[in-house]
Image 1 (cartoon, each protein chain N blue to C red):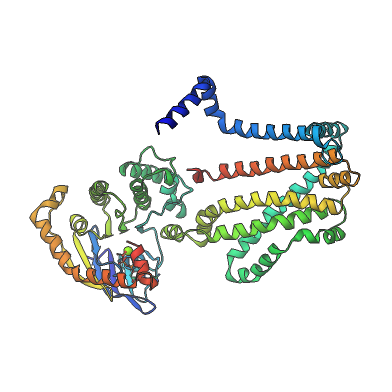
Image 2 (cartoon, rainbow over the protein chains, first blue to last red):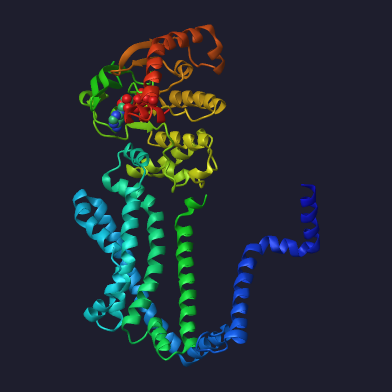
Length: 273
Length: 273
Ligand SMILES: Nc1ncnc2c1ncn2[C@@H]1O[C@H](COP(=O)(O)OP(=O)(O)OP(=O)(O)O)[C@@H](O)[C@H]1O
Ligand SMILES: [Mg+2]
């Protein structure tokens, strides 16, 4: 006990006081940033000193260079624009459609009985596997990818909307009912608000699934898009370009997911307490 | 004079269980009536039927001579468990009854504000329920029920979650609200001294089936100070009522113990404690 206390204080004494307060404030972020920076440095080192052959591994500096080149030539923006369109249209349809179907499912026992088996069965089906078929039906342009994206994003939306609406607590419904609330008022004032956290969690899941769906869709057949760029690069063994596409997708994925999280925090303030 | 609230030959069955049988009661305008009885004797069920949250198998409920079956703004219900909507602030919770009945106006808003002040929650308008103590939440519940200015207040063990001190203060507050607002109050409690302190009459229910065992008129002059609880007369009332329900309570405890975890009905009664 004594020895431990002494050690802690001696380590603390090595770091000057102002630095310590800065670390206390920014500590967690700095630690994450250092971890990523360290990982990138290691990657660069391994790439330069050991693997060398850029056919097997591109270094971060090569990838950064490639991204810059793609940007200057305008190629990157073009691919991002195509994938972005597919993503936003597909995700919007998934969100709107998923909430709508979820609402219909909870509106009556009959609707539930009709829809539930389809939802369960299709949710478990890897819809990505039928991507080639969808491309055949909807063509090689953006609409096939929009459909693939919607098909993948819609199920978490349906399931979460349904679960959220059903999850409304009975005693809260009763409380509102004791004031003479109609069915509609119960829906608007209790069921829907209690479903919002579920629906937003569904959006977060749908975002992730949509990104994967678009890339995979584009791998199967496209004329442009980040997934198309990726498959093209891999066919000609352009590793820097392949990695560039992967890095961009990862960054976009992180950004969009944190955006969805921020939306959750903003729309569900009572959950933060 | 016509009673404010009349209960005529009311009965209620849950499957094989005769929860209430042949209940007849008349409650005068501006009367404060407490209901006591062993756990599971049907107190909550009776109040829920009066509130219109549950339908009876026989008999009727009359308010000002008119039969009622559905919830309405003429009756306010204060629940045993805290039933504030977690996504609404204190203020939004307090006005929900007004919203549901389309009665939000400058005047009713000011009235609600004065009620929140009355229950000691001035300045907490923007707090979410999760930020309040149990006692504060129950006071919001009370203000919410009062906001519609119902002439009949139905209260199901409203103070059971409060600590002894808060409870005593709430009891005298309750009497103040009742006197100044000319309400008719039907108040369930497990604490016999609470019933004697508050009530003009104490209705003692028996169990299996739930029925009126005795009605005790409390002849203690008002206004009652809190120290009336130590007067011999007060203690006589408490003893008398306790003797009335003692055997029933013992039976219900033994029965619930024997059925614990086995039968769902008994389990529910325990979890309501
Ligand atoms: N929805 C229900 N379905 C089936 N049985 C029920 C239902 N509600 C109440 N009961 C049963 O009816 C009886 C009376 O219940 P009630 O809740 O009215 O008792 P109570 O007097 O309020 O008890 P407590 O003092 O423990 O709150 C109990 O045996 C209970 O199990
Ligand atoms: Mg009860």
